[in-house]
Length: 119
Image (cartoon, rainbow, N blue to C red; front, top):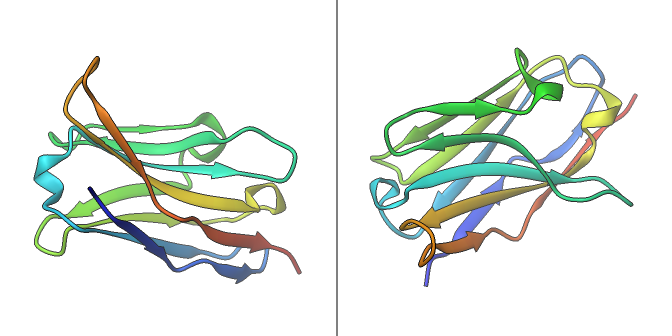
């Protein structure tokens, strides 16, 4: 079993920045892919950004140019840095990790951390 523990959420003013962290209970090199998702009230969970074990990154269109995903393998932690925050970035942000490849891939989720962008 893998544990993912997010931190760093909170209340941020529009135009501000935040950094989210997700500490994994095993070496991040073990994961095929790690990602951040978010879910706003009344909406489906959506991908924000992902990073593979080969450091290939992918960003959702709404956050391109404003978000950076990175991994510190010595700390087994994946980060999400977001700048120029907008009210529409308000959501619960979830860390996601995938172990192995389909069809036997295992998917793990963190408990989520609330991000609220408001003045």
